[in-house]
Image (cartoon, rainbow, N blue to C red):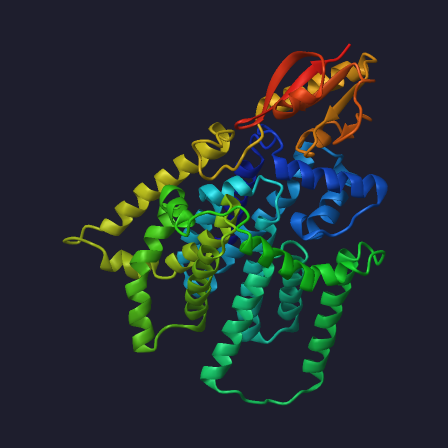
Length: 466
């Protein structure tokens, strides 16, 4: 029965992830990620830069391009695949939380933030899915002591660390939990037999091989290892200090209230139950870990000054898992004269969640002004501009994209198949047409033929110079 249910869940997941997958224009960051993956495929060129996050996304996307072609659909396949992995693992958590895993799976399916960013070429869903695999592997190993779960967990953690720098936050949370657990239970030495030695050796081999290969770009850039460790941490500490993408401390709280009210409600009403189970000594290690993960995540992301909407998925997930721990207990406790109030509230919030998720994902997906979940989304007119440039090029007109600040994304992605020059300085008088930002219009002499909104409040213009 559970396998049939999982199949139904996967069908729903595939439908929600693939429906209208290419309707939304490639966003600023998406276009950079896709373009760098395309360059990696065509020129075999890659160099890790913390500003653009880890290499796994680029190598994996380049591989997908090689198999399926370089399109918007293919570019978004990687986050879709990992979102499906996250849903499968969420369902498998039922061995520790019973029916609560179904509610957790529901949230992983229909959470507005998780659904939206499961269709968005970023690293966050990859990191999130991998950490769920780490959790599953860790607790399964504690149960059965089978080595394959160690290797699966190490592989997942390696992919995380090769995907995005906030994986170090996950690593710190996981390791600190394990150390605290050992501290309170006492440090005992059980000996170091051949099995343990094999586990250490194989785990090290998995990690070192993948981590080194990806960050050195196939062993061609050994300085990438320094940038991947010390350099990455230094870079993001600097971003925190200069308050890059700064938002007030309550930024994510507002997002949770606006979009993720279902897991937020569940987490809040679960707190008394958790406290009672801790006091009575009934709380399992799984419950304790989920609570620890939730608290540490809330602290970390609220304190960091760098706040962007896609990071909300890292907050929603532990909150949702914590809120799913005691579904059956809450169903018994929250009632009025045998009327199951909890179920009614849950149903209302679930329906509201699906509505909100579908509205943001399939209807209002370009509204970066009124939707907190959407960040400086590229507008359809940017695609129109790209088509206009291609049209002029195909009709033998010389054209250049000239922008002193290199603020021309997503055009390089949309123009990747055509040798359109991009310039930030120099003389453009030799070109018949110039595309530039509206703020740089005074640097180009000619007649403005069109004005295109690239993202909210930022415009580019097409100028005929001759």
